[in-house]
Image (cartoon, rainbow, N blue to C red; front, side, top):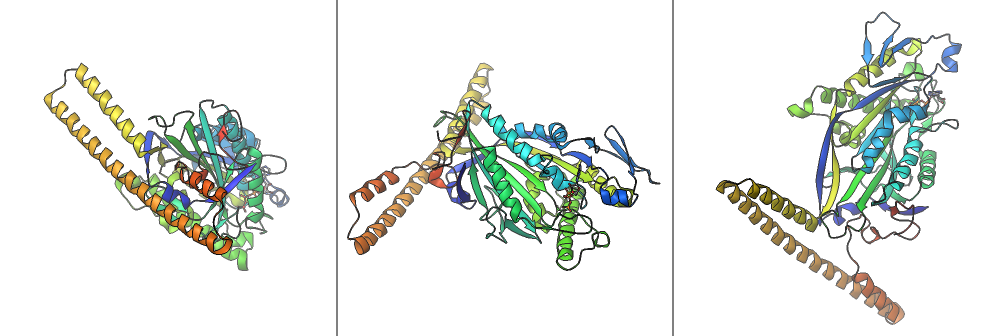
Length: 486
Ligand SMILES: Nc1ncnc2c1ncn2[C@@H]1O[C@H](COP(=O)(O)OP(=O)(O)OP(=O)(O)O)[C@@H](O)[C@H]1O
């Protein structure tokens, strides 16, 4: 069952009275696997051989080069997507439920099997549908939390962002804010309550993505696609307590378009223009990975995230706040050995990139203050027990003073916001009454009662404002007991 669609912009205003805090963090290198597809008919017909040797998680080519590539996993043609899912990506999903962002993307030359891996085929489900089903299973097992899920699906086509769930939304701008980080403005998000709803949205989006035939692939992706699931959750019955933090995390699943050589794809006209845009953005991705693998983040070096929309959108997943896995797809054919070496060099560099994922919590200001007060009191008790110095007592006094000032500022801000809200609502009501007088001879009693009720509603954090945790008609908050309003 689908819920209402919302745009991302709503988040900015509704977050004014909240605070994003970072819970515990996990520093981890990006996990990189290689998937080698079987030789295809075209390659077999042309007499090309299987040009690679796999030994455990090391790979080398049957060529004159001495290059050996060691990665987290190497999956030969005998591996099914489900097996790859279990080994390489399943672990990331538990982390999404615990508030960490996770990203999986497929990289590789055209026709190497990226879409087959991510989306799947009629015969075999891809990583995206497998992950979607698993997420719902996991959250159904979480008895103590309730969940709200939203999905979006976009493509980057010729350096423009298009909304695959609302094809009229094209050329969407990419913005950055302190609260939200990098985000696509105006992208449609649908609330979802079951895997079938997500899969049907995926199919809807799929019909809108740019696909075209080249000499190397009859159904070549001409755009990068980014499917995102936002998982919000909170403890049941935690309203008003310092445990009332909302965890907000994202699962991002990306099917990149493949790098291509015009000589091999035979691309002309529009296909060639697409190929140029694809190669350009992949080049930037390669540059970002290069810089990160050389440690540019820790030395303050420039990382060219802004050189393409792809790297801007993937920024948190590359050296940032996310747990990331990359599946590098490659063909084993001898005729493409150059491209495969290039994919593997990318893979080895990506493996050296370290991310720092944190639990993403959103607290109301009141809850933040409550938590700080509790921490100070705990600290004080611990120090009292250990015979603390006058200096430490002074520090605690200072912290308390700071807390008091924050509380006062917070209260002033709250009063100001409340006054502004009332002013807005009053003005709105006056306009409504004037309109009724003009067109209908005055508001009905029911309208006045409904309007009074509306004004008494509580503001919630959730984007979309008053829809919040109260499930909108036909949509809603997911609970461990299953979909439905709570
Ligand atoms: N592991 C596999 N087993 C069997 N067939 C595969 C496998 N991987 C890919 N294929 C087949 O190879 C062809 C190309 O795969 P796919 O479209 O996934 O490539 P791609 O990397 O996404 O290409 P592009 O970058 O051009 O979009 C498809 O017909 C697909 O079904």
